[in-house]
Amino acid sequence: MHPKTSLALFCKVVDNYGDIGICWRLARQLEQEHGIAVTLWVDDLRSFQRICPAVSIDSEIQQINAVTVKHWRDQDSAFAAEEIADIVIEFFACDIPPGYIKAMSERTPHPVWFNLEGLSAETWVEGCHALSSPQPLSLTKYFFFPGFTSRTGGLLRESGLLQQREAFQQDPPAIAAFLGQFGVTPAEMAALKISLFCYPQAPVAELFAAWQANAKAITCLVPEGVANDAVQTFLGQTATAGASATRGALTMRVLPFVPQPDYDKLLWACDLNFVRGEDSFVRAQWAGKPFIWHIYPQDENLHHVKLNAFLQATTAKTASLIAFSLGWNAAAKDTIDWTDTWPQFEADLSKIANPSIDWQQQMLANGDLAFNLLKFAGTVKQESKQI
Image (cartoon, rainbow, N blue to C red; front, side, top):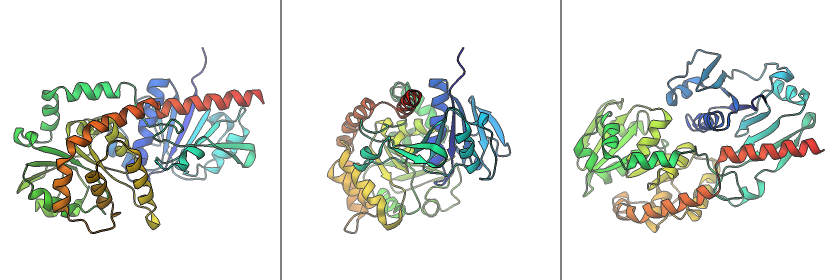
């Protein structure tokens, strides 16, 4: 019996939940679907616990869903060659410990070393995907880019995800029961249901004003801590989980942070999803519903380039979607009047939904990120044996 392939995944939490969200999904899929012995090194267990309640924030090492989770405390630890995994992934160039790298060089054979990069639709990604980079100590690092074309690593997607989504979306009692646990009433279920997940810079207060004046009732479901100032102002009370209020056409409910599978259900249950960063952005695409992406802000507005690249690439776009997306990300040339922009966008939601499914089919054809990564690692191992 061959020993399991081992993999170490290093994650530094920078974007609150996005970094660990991606790494946790990838770790689970590698173990559950591919039988990989995964060790997830993460520096912020408290953020991890928000999306995975099973995490103990006081444990140096723990087993969760057959994944070994280690608290990554510092850069000073020493390692032995026999501790090093067959495949090593640093998420988003997170500088794994020098002692681990030294032990990688002492291991025979050397592990396959990846820098798993951030997601972008920019065309240069295709040229950089899977490139090798010689490192000190005779090691080689490979840059692996998730992406939207066959010349990238594809998107993170578990086997059976779309079948689960379709079964849930075709089961109205299941949707009602899921949303009902958060206090959503039948009347709120019948309204336009919107999930809101964004960064603090989003023009949330202005959009809330447009929603209050909307011709159709809107139910907005927002996780605790998101857009906190604007939500509290709307509610007239502290925005803790369970708080709710109705003003004009808008009813708002504050939800607790939920485990990742339940967040997927939230996206599936809503008519429109506002998402941010990378993890929820990818999950919104698999939800098959219209969505607005709040991209992670970067210096010198570099994130606007990434936003425009995606808007040009996706099939699920209308003039109103582009205008709304640019305004939401402060990338529009002119000042946005949300009382005009929102009705135009709302009228186009049905036009956006079908192309969302077409886009999804294109993404499916690229294969999923975990499979593509392991396939590439296998190719590297074979080539190394032949040298």
